[in-house]
Image 1 (spheres, rainbow, N blue to C red):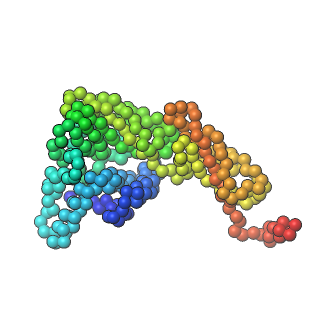
Image 2: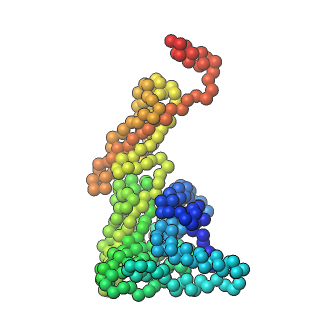
Image 3: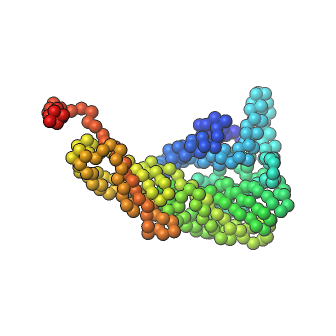
Length: 323
């Protein structure tokens, strides 16, 4: 089995902190996201690798375990790679640490329909099926739902809280979207509301069979909204930029502004200054609890100066200068 260098995939050093890892991930995720590269299988595979790398390196315990594996694999390579690397050893081991014991389990679920697809055999070998007993009365750990990391914290065996990260595009966050999950033979449709933001939790009641009590546990989808090339978001407000020519800035006119709902015409008053910002009321994100209400869209104006002027234009500018 081929070793996957998650640090190389994200383009970060092994000493990178969580902020560096998150920034690198967001940049690459936006570049290779399937929404930006429709039908491009190469980009789709890169996106899966990027997501897988981030899932591991953004998690303290999984990163520690991965680093231990990397050290052992490097030592094996330095010996000339004699014999096969003992993957089975890493298949059965779990990470150790202080505080509550941790373990990994597999949630009984199939055919998870998500934007990523499943994780690689390498990930599944190292993180997918390892297990160790939980500490009585309290435990913390992680499981998988068809290749996606599912985390949970338990204070008693019958009270399990499961979470599954899910990424959505900016447009999905603006309009709302759905995910279809097949859990324990049941096909479940979950709606992610318009206005969802990173950190939004969507509860799916009684979605996953409980191995402890024989009943069902709730599953929470934890939303992450991918960056968008046109808009930056702050709460329910959005900001964007447009470029106008010098003549429109000086004389006034109109300019196209891209909004999440399509293009609108913005009236540019005469004498508009570079960097001036205009507010388009109600053109921002819908508010999750009151989706008919929206935040605002702030449009920052950039003025493009002409690089070359005709003789007549130069004369006219001289006249203006000297008037």
